[in-house]
Image (tube, rainbow, N blue to C red):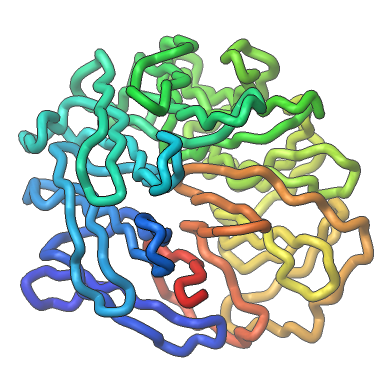
Length: 399
């Protein structure tokens, strides 16, 4: 939310009933790209980690950390490009957590802390804001990088997974993109899969065990401008190609991974924007079910309706709530949500997904969770359009 005082932005914290708990005023800026929360230094208190972005005003761009209780800034780390996909995890094996993030390169002339905004990188910061390492990728121009952290091979050590892309002014522009596995201790590349096409950062990156072998697979969206198509692509933990699903849409977002139908296998949920659909893909990326929306949408998975089964909530021309049996659906206009009509479907309780990283956020039913597309509280009774919520997150800051 813009305060109209020196272009400062405010982060508003609400509880589940909609009561305003806290307001933190950030550095003078134009855009907050992400908000996360974690106890970085193990003092029993959670800090608020904020990605600050800028356009042609160039600065500030970077990571800013605030004390939740006082609202004061603890430290910041500025960079040339805009920060992207901020992830908090212990990747060095010490007692504290690290902040790992990628970058978005607008290529309009900014430089800070050893990197320009015509470069892309993965950067790892300590809990007190010191740079531990930075790995810059070889391509320059309009280049971006997204990161995720996961133990892919089950050996007890987290790996850093990065995907890169070249973007342009046209939606089909770009001829460079790779997926990397990076050593978390020093930032060195361990494995790479070169697609030769953009691996889109804003569409999300899914990581889960799809075939039950104890190792995790990686799901990304690869854009092919020459064919005007996007491939939802699955790689194994060694970055070998497993499966692909082709769609004629440049904006096919990976919204979530979840065992929606309770069969013990994860499904992939995507929302291609041009064809305005919600599509469920199986563990092998075969299409299982689809539904045509009234407009392009964003989806999340949540146990919205009490009953122990997950629902799929889609924001498009309407607010759609899908039951966990394919084809079961309730629709309501934004003007009023009649929750008395929302009943559980009685299907088997779906297993929780591993995680999905990216513009659709990270969804993890077992612990910390956040989602950029938002969630409607089961206590909410009405919403009146038009409204916009940017970088909305759901965090336990008081426990």
